Length: 462
Image (cartoon, rainbow, N blue to C red; front, top):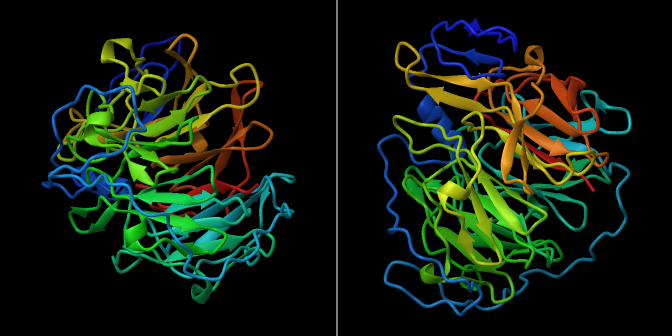
């Protein structure tokens, strides 16, 4: 492994791999298999797989029309889901753990958790944290209106795709036993999830086995702790995995891209429980599996980074900008470009300080095909700030290099506006202060997961 340091006052000496200005980067040689490992994390098809997508369509600025059936897509309105279990009262007591962060799927078996305690800026000591029923990676995690955390799907240590879920209660700091958790209709890894305004949770797509991806969705009701049956859920127009997702101001859900060569998007209407037909959805300028979406305060959605394909890969520094008012993506000439290409990075919206409302891009990896002998991933230490007012990026502060393992990152915006950043291969964390626009060392986790391509999820408890 070679480590590079870039001084802002001196040019950086090239030592085997490309570097980027104002970035401290780290490279790992002999990364010929890294692309396929990254694909697993993102829920992408294995190398050599393919995913077809229709040519780009001119979107119609109406996204709530009644969907029509097509020969290759299912876009019919479905019946309203019905509860399959006796509803239970939704807890309204805010947990004492409010403001804490649950990291789930940590440790060598992806079954452990870490609990960041915001009040003391510490992690709960070993033996006091909850353990999931099943170790899993490639799952999703969302905060429910009843303050609990739903963790769904993924792959277990034996490579089995999971339909099971976990339900974490911050009031008891425990996971419900399997007999008291809901099961999805379909096992899936690498889906996307969003909490709807109704409090229900939409889980869409993902890999179901091997190279198979799904058009199906799940609809979870936290009141009844059940998933709607298959006949009461909507199907997307195309199978997707590694997609980007955002809840719009209208309450509709935008799901964009996902597969290799896939530029199309989906628009889910929770009122009619249906997806708009392909002719009523917008298309991105280029495919970007593994990109991240940030819903901005101006009603637009920024979709940044990602990669072009699987083998050989190419990471992207370009972005997409979706406008809900016109149901269109801006042309590439009207979108901002990041200073560094990124995948396996983190993106959050800042809530405090002089940069409040801006999107904050943190760390990640980019792929250099010219790195000997056969290309390699390089870690990005720098950050970037996207300003919706000027539609442009500006450099942010560098992370603390000594606290990073070589891996992707996960980040959560805390209640006080700071951003907690963790990596998948290091016990160390760091905190970004939006007031001073700088990073400081955070507390250490109890153990390192040591999975470079990423495993655990991070959820702010409220």
